Image (spheres, one colour):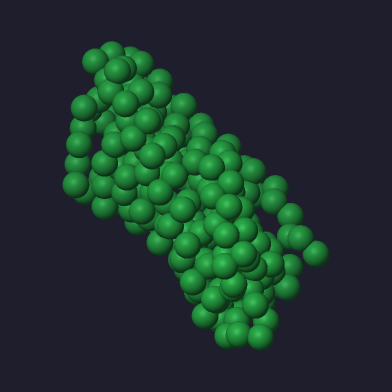
Length: 208
């Protein structure tokens, strides 16, 4: 592990990154408004697990290979973007079908799986870990172990913030749940947000 000073710098920087609104937070808000608190929480945990995929890939060098290959980066980017856009269209189309107060274990399980896939297929997450974590790694010690530990801390902070955001979004949704037409519009808006996130990912460029 890095020394105490470096560790404190890392924790401070990682916390700032976690608190900064980004695509992950917007995705969590959209899922929570569309499906409620349980689906939002499941999505948050799913995103966290998907983030761990990138941490492990970064530790063994797979992420570096993806970022070094324009073809691999583009393929992963397109897969992630198409998946997000598909989820957005699906959410929009199902906005008027689902009951406003629907709470489903199946829905939560699906939200968890989709969260994992969304994050695992996001090459920008891989790029972030590869750019951020090495700044705090002590090169004279085992790099892979440090990468994993720091990555786990970063993912834990991000997930904690996502869970708090989920609770806030669920409270906002609860105040509107007795108005079916408004809930339908919220779900449609959530679908539009997911499509927008997919479009933004599709336009993402590989950093040189």
